[in-house]
Image (tube, rainbow, N blue to C red; front, side):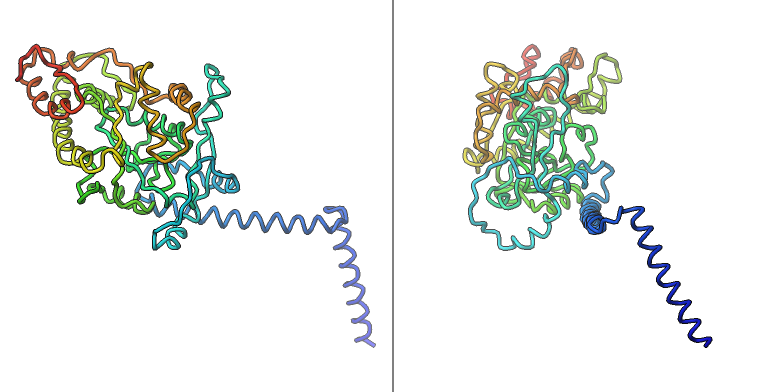
Length: 399
């Protein structure tokens, strides 16, 4: 009798709880079972996104664990745009890389991103040019069809500005061999990356050595690791930006002195003159050595197929600049789109931090220092002669 009573109570409790459960379910889900399926689907998708995002974050952490710069390509943005088609068109061919499968595993978490990283200002409402503000990473299937190009110049020669132009002309991001240039993070979406999925990679000759017929990174283990992670081991294709060496030296001195890419030296003081003398000699030594030992040999080996020279002065000249930059798209193996050329210059005026409008010249810091002037000319005259840059110190009669 007691057993029967317990069984009856248990059945009543079971039925009651079941009904209560259904009632609560109806309160929150309005009795629609499809909501349960939808909720389960959303939870599943959310879990997948979280897992993928954690994978990408882990990858970024491994590459840049010693880099204090922020990761400039947010994982959430990459995941959200993973279904977008790349805007860069590169002719496909059968890859000859033997370890392509392994390489694909490395870049499997780096999705193609199309985004406009630069803010549109009220002063620039040209819709025709705004279309070209969108940039992308090169599709993984096409990145094996080209040798990566090193955008190389001596410091202060307009490398940053030229990168802005290249990104608009090609529609693809550019990268850098360097890790900690936080000043450029608001201009270049992929500043902290170095890989095959970019139109070109920025570098200065002092960071490279001759490796046979190539240039390879020589200093800084983190820079080497960064580029190798992106499957770049050396360079044999180059776009070299030439500029009057004394103007590039003065430009770089202003950056070093101010700590900013667009920083200025506006007042001449004894301490600034002393610092300029020290830096000018170091930078002139670098130009002399790196031109003779690295850049000129690469030009001799690879010009004209794999070595393109552009002059900074021609980019400044409104009558010459479009003709000067036009060969870049073909050299980088991107489709030539005429409308991108004028838009590249228009859009390049928008980002802050790349244009410097100096009120002084290097003559203000050299003054009547005959010894310094002739020392500098003896170091830069070989490079100057190759590009027809005149002696800036003729009054001192150094030769």
